[in-house]
Image 1 (cartoon, rainbow, N blue to C red):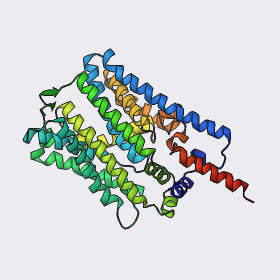
Image 2: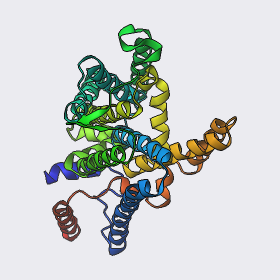
Image 3: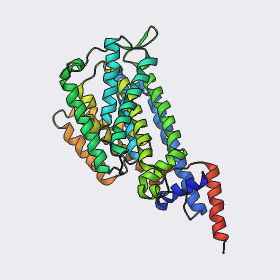
Image 4: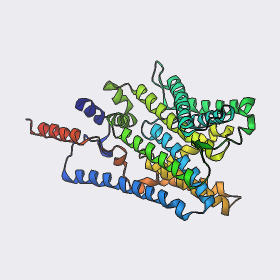
Length: 370
């Protein structure tokens, strides 16, 4: 395992914090330790703010905050795909919306609204669609280019949008309205604090699972894949298989978010699978910062919050103002707002104390060797 980890680390440029840094001096170690301490602080502040939000917000703002947290979960799915594997997916809404339609049909046609049935069903729907699309785009005989995958996912999202608009069974242009509330036994989850904390709890659990994933051996391979795919392939890793796996996982997370969104809003419509929502989630991650997970959450909260405030105060020109703000952030902070507190080194992170100790011993032996 150590040999394979060392191979991946060689694919990560030392200047952004690969663990195979030749300079193992105390200053570099202190810098890495400091960077690793900042991320938990940011995560803790965001979690505390989210926990206290319903206590200070008015009822209608709690409903809005619930929607934002669901979109943050959706943004998390895209950050896994793009921020960690370098896959620019313009079709993430396909998995988000298809899961929403799937659970809406379960509620409408089969009267199934139990939370332990509809949420796993939505996750499986998103995961299945991602597996099919990812298998087609990523597992061909020859490695797929970034442009091919981007256009392929974009085409899939556009085709799903047109299909939903023209299929009478799915409600056509009007979608599926009046979805029955999600239930747990006799209790129904309606808009309000209960639904808010349910969604927040799901986001925290999924976030922790994603954090564990990207800090694992698999996550280390993804980090090397994002930075230098050709070198990773040279070391014997099946780069396209790694991409397909994380693409499928991202689709499952997007499906979970789409299921929650359908029940929270009470209806689904073709835009949920279309290009607009696919582009929207890209902006979340661009604005907040890719490759850190928490950046995607922060980006979704800020973009939606600013949009809400601007649309209420500048109804005629708010899209222009929002577009200018997004453009300024992308121009002057290409790593997103999270880069104000986290360096690019944090996008790689640490992958186990034992591996680091062994690596230091190897470096020391190489230095002492004649």
